[in-house]
Amino acid sequence: MRAIRSLLVLSLSSLSLPTFTNAFLHPCNYFPAPRQRQLMYGRRSMAGRHSLPRVSCQKAQAERERVLIDRASNMKRLRAKEEGKEERGSTIVDEGRRIVFLCCLVGAVSSLDRQAMSIAIVPMSGDFGYTETVKGSISSIFSLGYTLALPPLGLAQQLSSPRLLLASGVASWSLFTLLTPLAAEQGVSYLLAARFMVGAAEAVTLPTVQTFVSRWIRPQERATALSVLSTCFQVGTITALVAAPKIVSEQGWQQVFTTFGSFGFVWLLFWLSISKDSPPVYMSSEQVSGVKGELETERSKETFEPSTKLPWRQVRTSKSLWSTAAAHAANNWGLYVALAWLPSFFSQNYHMDLSKSSLYSVLPYLAGAVTSLASGWGADKMISQGVELVQARKIFQGIASFGPSLCMTGLAIYGTDNAPEISSALFVASVSLGGASAGGFAASLQDLSTRYSGFLYGVTTFFCSMAGAAGVYATGRILDETSSWPLVFLTTAMIYSIGGAAYLLWYDATPIEDPE
Image (tube, rainbow, N blue to C red):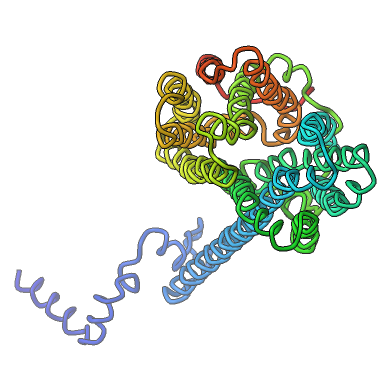
């Protein structure tokens, strides 16, 4: 025992304090791990010699640090690459919003040029001696041109550049608006031809705008974008009703067409310098919208490649498409009747003069503009918070169909025998509730197909515009035969209910895909 104790003391005395500290702080120098020992001493051969040279612990530590540095550098490069993608995606979204904003402005311009004739026709009939039949023909020829041009223009924007097609449409209707005073001086047939061309050229607006919204705007923001567009249309109508009478009184009816027609050419300067057919980096519809997915890297192109194959079979058989068309047609029936007959109702039923009846006519569109904007935003908000898309669409379309139906029923029962304020309130409520369609059928074509939304709009709106024109004609026949405004309102209420019921029963947002 005494010998063992002496040997232990001698061993400890041979380790100096720095050496012991170094062993404690760097144990691999004295107590290497199995792999470290293998690197330091190598494997022993049959002869007992080392087969590998000794490697210091410092060199192994340096190798580990190099690997960590390389890994951190790679992570930094990947992070920078992802940030670059996000930055490019943000740029695309901002550019898309600017383009769609210009689309909304052109909606207001088109409403100005459309409504110019409704104000100018009064002094024009005095100058040229138009009869009531001629006045009716001049007012209705715009709708005829618009309706007949919708299907071919909806097809054309699918087969060509929607950017250039919209530009040519704006240039055409602006030119014919400017030429309207000259055409009127040449004769009624020239004036009818000019107004027909204005209507036909304006038919390009909504199909192409649907296409731009589908390509440039996120799915969760499309109802908001379309509601802004609808609001701009109503703002254009209100502006025409307010500004045109003042222009006529101060500068003559000719100046109405000169002023309103020039706005389109000003808009073209911005459109041609800013707009593009599709995002610069070609992505799928979800990727363009910034929802998820990665950029497709096989190619990048600046121009839109048109599609020559169209989904005709799916168009014929889609219940969602035609239920959307039914709701749209019912909405057009009620809206066209209000546009054409609202001033006449107040004038005939309450014996108002033109200026006062015009004031009552403006109020519903002010309310409708506000409701339309709020409904589009509300629908997008509900969807972003987890409400199913189909459920959100049906909620807003139910409000937009059955709300006006109740208001029209109220007008039939109470409106005609009470104060004009009651009738005005019911009209305001009807148009305002109808604005909820911005979150309903107005956004439904975007749900069915982002690629073919403009084409689908052109096809379905042909029938919807015909329904609106039929409503105007049917109202005139009812008044001629019965002189009953209540019957007019009850008929309109029934049409609203039929369109709303079709949408609630059959709309399921089944997509319309590319034809095989």
